[in-house]
Image (tube, rainbow, N blue to C red; front, side, top):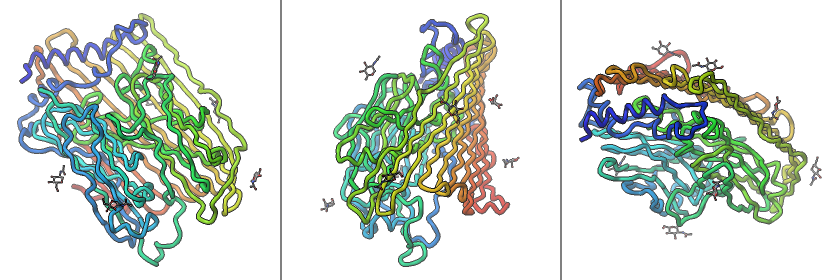
Length: 586
Ligand SMILES: *[C@@H]1O[C@H](CO)[C@@H](O)[C@H](O)[C@H]1NC(C)=O
Ligand SMILES: *[C@@H]1O[C@H](CO)[C@@H](O)[C@H](O)[C@H]1NC(C)=O
Ligand SMILES: *[C@@H]1O[C@H](CO)[C@@H](O)[C@H](O)[C@H]1NC(C)=O
Ligand SMILES: *[C@@H]1O[C@H](CO)[C@@H](O)[C@H](O)[C@H]1NC(C)=O
Ligand SMILES: *[C@@H]1O[C@H](CO)[C@@H](O)[C@H](O)[C@H]1NC(C)=O
Ligand SMILES: *[C@@H]1O[C@H](CO)[C@@H](O)[C@H](O)[C@H]1NC(C)=O
Ligand SMILES: *[C@@H]1O[C@H](CO)[C@@H](O)[C@H](O)[C@H]1NC(C)=O
């Protein structure tokens, strides 16, 4: 058992290193290491011991959850047809090969990918004891289909599950036999003894036969082929590439079938180690701006300005219990339209798709899937690039400080990418334009002689794809606000308080047909935690979370959720999928 004083020491260390950042100094020695934004097992044990007896729950399991809208099959669908793909206990798995299972399409999938109206991948897991949050990935035939962070367990155990819409991988699911691989790099020692037990299940729903739902594919129909851009088995890690620094480029060669008429690259990304909390990094740590650039034969053809996923152990792990941070159990992916470049890709040769991370420090896990639509009526399509403009990233960091400790710096960045190309198939000769307008700003304010730090960041990404007429335009506008406050008082006295606040949002508007069909999501969390220490011991800890999730679509789809927790208890949880104004409580 850790002693109170060892717990106190690490909390104090945490207070000091996090808050006494000599932000504007050039001394690398004064910089915090990323783990200082994490709590040790002793810290957590000391906090749990200070909770009211009722909340300690040492023998019963707690369920943690990520707020998301429920997945519902289109009306008239049959199913689900459910198949357990893998069941495994992840103990000492770090630097070991991924766990694999042979996959063959379930017998209910006989009539092929186009019969699938909804495919859901369900990850259900449990863990008991002490363990860090671990990043895991799931690959089918080398294509990543789910990435998440695990929940950090409690002594009495935790359980969580995530259901992801994997309909866009229908071609992979229906294709022949393949290897399913899961990498979850866990470590077991005397202190960190939590083993992750996980089940992975595929649920398939099917379109009604012959009915209205069986008519030709909807506009957003899944691709005909999904080509992985990742590392190949066998290996002792995930299949993701690991980008280590700002000049590192990781790549794979891909070949495109000769009759492709549309290509979309879906990028998976997560930040780790020195860049886990990249948005809090000082100028000495390459500043707070990061982007993943996608390179085709060395040219930047798209950029991902990632949502800052905070893993379940980040900032203060208590904040994410039981409502986890946005995207942590099911990380978002980002689409780059490559159709304007198809002319080049269709030359019958292999081409290099590479990934770099601007300003990177160790480590970024990046890989991608190339979704391809194939012309059913022709064995050959042709294309050509008409225009391509990708000026250099514009960005700056400005610092202001009177005393070298307290002060402020502001980082901004902006990038535009535009590409236009034609593609001739049996559907005619269509010109496609892909445009990205990306903006970023981050302010980092240190005050109180280095005892408080506040960062306020916004990422704004507007992506437009126009294929043919302006009425066929698709637009995705994402905005990711992030505010983090670290502070405290009483440093060096017998009575201290450590405070953390996080406000984070994932806002997205999608429109199709030049605005004829739209959907809007506003997903926001506001959370705070406070730990009180007296004479070197934790005397109390409290935390609260409020999340609102509002989704609405012009086709009538909607989902509202308004949920709040204090400590481990859910205070209220209102949800409404009818959006008729009635609210059902829990
Ligand atoms: C996984 O499935 C097995 C068999 O159905 C079940 O006993 C076990 O509890 C499941 N584990 C989880 C984490 O759901
Ligand atoms: C696919 O796997 C199944 C079960 O392992 C096996 O019976 C079948 O012969 C395989 N099919 C092919 C085409 O390899
Ligand atoms: C960057 O990372 C690559 C790949 O690990 C390595 O070969 C290279 O030496 C690194 N460069 C610097 C400047 O550290
Ligand atoms: C990107 O385009 C916008 C106008 O759409 C312009 O204001 C901005 O300066 C451009 N940024 C860069 C880096 O070219
Ligand atoms: C398709 O249209 C573009 C521009 O309008 C033209 O340059 C190209 O030659 C056309 N391709 C074919 C195969 O007709
Ligand atoms: C963060 O900055 C934005 C834009 O300047 C501002 O509207 C917002 O109030 C700030 N958030 C906080 C919590 O200070
Ligand atoms: C969420 O529910 C609380 C408690 O019922 C209420 O006070 C608040 O206005 C609701 N917020 C939203 C955005 O609906």
